[in-house]
Image (cartoon, rainbow, N blue to C red; front, side, top):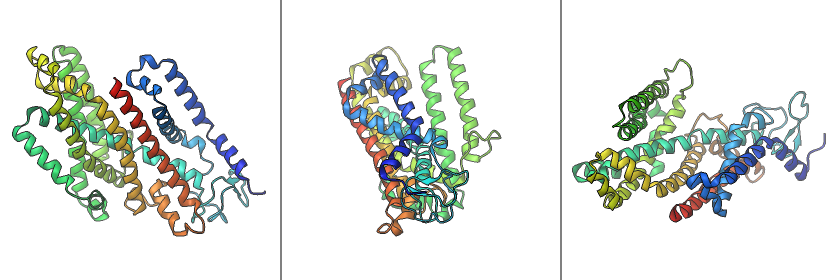
Length: 386
């Protein structure tokens, strides 16, 4: 077989990505059709920048979801004589395999295209959820620090500043180092950090439905049940169903990302709370006799959603870059993982001769972070109009 031309390569890539195109068309079509009923998300479609960013982010999200349908080869499999193959190279003896390496092969004769697509799944199963846990911890601590002030504020702010005083990369190196993984420190940190989402949701629902005991007991009980199930699975790897599970190496990376990001979120939430707690509607809620947690979670927090949503999108981008940096230095997930940082690191040694094994994942990482930044810009514009 003859090698593919670039036009043929792009045509075949578009064909492999057909599930992504269909999902994008359906998502955009339904969102635009009902955007007036979708709040801030619907208003995002009035922003050209926001729509472009949202489209780029959705492309990678759907690529991660449909990765098993999109890839042409197993991300870890090696094919003889395809070491550092250029894009569009045919397999010498394909048999039942896809007959081409569409974006070439890496130094271990693995398909670059398949590894980049599977790498999106590796990145997107850590970055958004780590950012979400960081936000729950930051909100849980930042709201009372800003609202009550005093010694509580002083103590929590000191601890946050203590963590932020360390250089981020150095802190990551310390937390993800193999020597640390062999100790009980990651397990203790995971046990403390993963309890925060359960506490946050429990307090949130208890404050909202405090005067409706039946609903409160139902919702809080559900949160505690599911939370305990997830907690023992993620922290102690003791979920018999395997739904909630995380390898020790991945758990260590996840905990490190949450630990580094939470203090920054705390500072942002605290600062917003200090401003909003002086507003008239907060004073009105206090006059009605509402409890402090109700005021913090159902009066202050909803009015801080604009800056927090924007920061959440940006933080996913920062986390993606940090994960790529860790993978580049060999401190991320397992070495054979197709995550983008590890793939870039593996391809950089032959960058001047065979640039595609490092260039493709680097462009993927850049595009995802660019999409998140554009999405944050669009959300910022619309939240200011809201």
